[in-house]
Amino acid sequence: MDDSAGVGTYHPADDFTITTLEALKVFSDPLRQQIIEALLDSPRTVKQIASELELVPTKLYYHINLLEEHGFIRVIDTRIVSGIIEKRYGVSARTFTIDRTLLSPGQKTGDQALDAALASTIERSRAEIRKSIQQGIIDTSQDAPLHRKLIIGRGRSRLSKQQAEEFFNRLRALMNEFEIEMRDDEHADAQAYAFMFAFYPLSRPAATGDTPPPLDDEQDESALSTKRPHD
Image 1: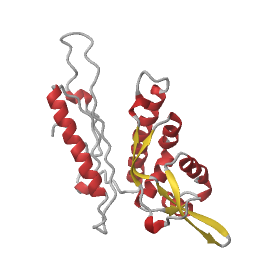
Image 2: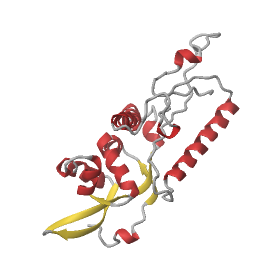
Image 3: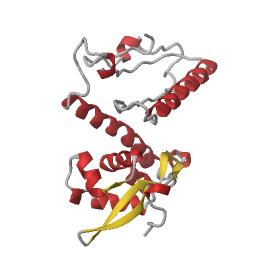
Image 4: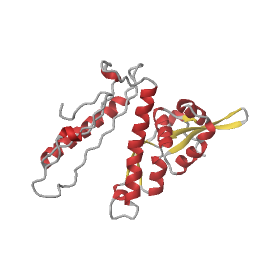
């Protein structure tokens, strides 16, 4: 039991690399993703996590044990409460990355690992967006203030190698800036936000001279306030 350091000296690592399919499946579960995110701000007990997620604690113990077993979270300290040992958990790292070899087509587990990786991002985002709309955090009205809007869309374009590299670097820089701002606790009224993105090369047209459909055909429009990539 790791209770020697305590909350005061708790310092998670900068990064944790997921190297096995089993660990990736554990990490990809939507509820376990919520548990990890709840612990990113500060260490919490199971009861505190359950309260934040609006669940009963008994529904979390199995998932907590799996996350601890695979090293995603760890016990920070313990105390006795009414004769019962209460554990406080913290994340083992600030960010979690997937070993790229897991996603290789040459690996027997490649397809499963890719599905798990995509599910951990897409499913989580879908659930968060739906919950934020239900709770009124996302304002779906046309004249909603910008800080309450949802921007969602899909676009396709032809880029040269240089253009793709430049866009990739700009997108990565924007994501890094976003993550730094999210860690800024200076503003007491700060609202949590999520930012999901995907940028990837597509398969080539089947025949020479084929062109992709116009952007309008690819755009996934929504009444929830969408923005075209070229706006």
